Amino acid sequence: MREKPAPISWLQALVPVGFGWASMSLSIYVMVGLAWLTSQLGISVSDAHPFIKSIVLAFMMAGGPEELTKLAFIILTVLLFRKKIRNVYEYVLIGAAVGIGFTIPEEIGYAQKTAAVWIRMLTLLGHMVYGMIMGKYLGIARYNKLNNKPRFLQYVLAILIPIILHTLYDACTSGNLMLLSENSAESDTGITLGLIATAAHFIIQFVILYLAKKDTEKHCEMALLEQSTQKTA
Image (cartoon, rainbow, N blue to C red):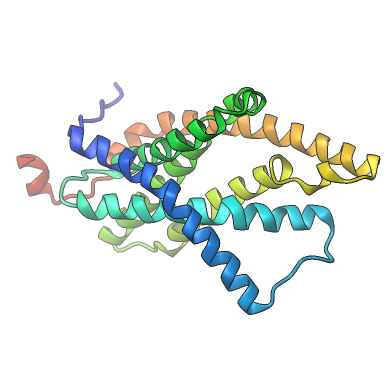
């Protein structure tokens, strides 16, 4: 019989949602910082292919700053509730909550654009599942640390996977400069990439949710508290 996850406190559930909301505002400052750093380093892709420019733009405008700020607030949540987080599964929940918190103000902003709303309905769970990926690997990293196992790869995956998924999706859709090309063939390629990316992202969301549900029992069993603490909690 599948183990039922123990309930968490309302504070532990709501705080990461609030942090996710705050990360939306903070990501703007990170974006400005990345733009400044790029200019100081003299990095330019002005002569690159439009799709390469799209990838860089997507990373600078969304994939990088948004995922980095969400990661920061997931870590902050973990630090605040460190003595209460019992297993890896709760890390996944924290990541999901921060992602939901980020989604709320972002979707409110897009709600004014009717066409965008219908398209974004297909990828509405994006920030949530990115957060779940972060939470999962951060939780496994802590579990490995407590059990004297390697953990560097988990830290890398926690940030790399969400940034790559987010950046590639935006590079093919909202940040796709090929869509603005006067070359009809290039423009058509941009439209095709956008359709493929949207369909792929839609499917990936539910694959991640399915895997999270499938691994619930395993993640619940990956305890992060001392046995004595778990018994008295």
